[in-house]
Image (cartoon, rainbow, N blue to C red; front, side, top):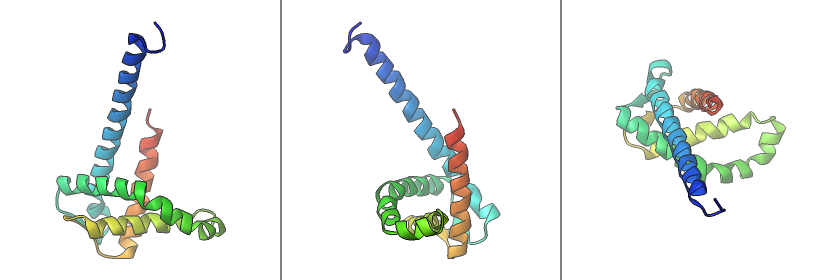
Length: 130
């Protein structure tokens, strides 16, 4: 069947469903990760799974909209530190999310740094899943 045929439409729908399933799985896994952070990192509190999912969505939006600008501004420092300054940017994003999200609090920058480190590690693990 041609370019606009039924086979291509079904293939596109199945591809979109697969992409949406991966995004949903990633949000849920990172939500559980944020929910688990208070058990491992003192200074981080989450009032419930609903707030952990909300923090996950806000973090994803912050990483989508704000982080590219901050990363561009801090690019020279990131180059000099061989990318390690990216961890500082991730911690700042997590702290920013905690300021804007009810039910999710980060008491110190140290807690934000280690929390962002754990979330980054889980993002890497999730990205390796097929």
